[in-house]
Image 1 (cartoon, rainbow, N blue to C red):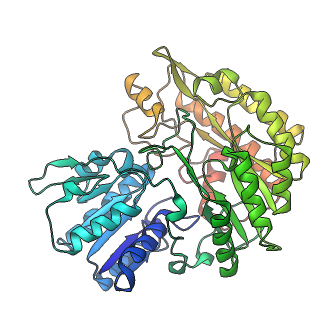
Image 2: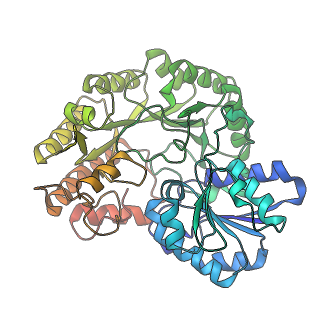
Image 3: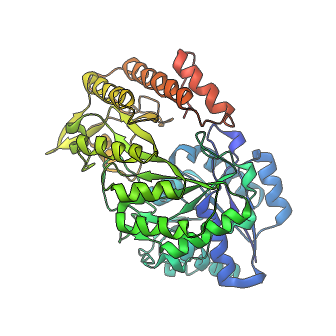
Length: 474
């Protein structure tokens, strides 16, 4: 049994392969667990050209090929899939990730893939491996959680696959398949090599801009790993040489009591000079949790600020108050934890079926809110993007209903991707430049930056100076 699990060749596009693809590494571990030593898995990393990618496929001679991708890389994914199928016409191709989960029929219509896996794929991929590798080309209708093209070319969808509630059951990702030193990690960090550990799956909230079709494919929307299980993987990665670990998940403080136990389990490892960072909601923060962050060297929290306008936060379903954002920043800073804010401009939403959106004054209000946080030393770093409709999100549905999609493929999170009434593309680009100047001023001022992302650094400079399109900036 020879299976390829592939990342897209990043040299063919502008996207940044910052960390190893955890989804594929989880699939590799699950295949090994199900089928034992007879299952050979090749992970094709993203640090190569399409030509080298195809050469790796030819050399391995797989029985099954799988690829993972999101909306922004779908064009490259279709090109790769079509060339794989053209060169190896008898090779079954399965695909998964955000885009195949959110829009599987579009994927099968627009490329030569055979199957899309929806939601988390550990069990579905193992079932597909059993199906294809036993020589049976019928009976895909019995594999839950997929959309496939049948022998007559019709697209079929099977029943939803129940989610595994106890996610400690999943084996650790197949970390032996990757070289951590080949991944640059976050451009803001304290140490390297970096990697990430998925501490939970999903989010109980429903912000309109969030496209989370993998974890929200079925319920429950959020599942937590046990602190002991997380700590065991952290130990494994520290022994492998990782010196900064991103405790990955939509928000670590989704359950503050559980997050505190996670910190205690990590503290008990006594790792010394290993650093951590994480994502946080701008509420649910306690002084005790911030102290626990300090004790484990969690040096920066990525906080979802999103907007400096309360009407916007209410409209998009963020369920947080501006004063809670300020208080969370204050608590973190009081314990020496730096704050990295995620912010979006030009949000849009619906109220009783009526389109609402941020105008230029609202955007200036967000910029000013962030300036005030910086002046009060409650914010250290920031990231800007334009609210972007993604398949699987309520914002996408709103954009379709109100004819806000400008008729071209969405290119990136700095582009004017919503045709908002009275808002010109030049207005959006000017606001983005203002945000990037503010961001980069404090980025340099506060330090802890890496220039291992040369393409992204150059893209940032071009946007700030108005010299080119913003694709590839961060």
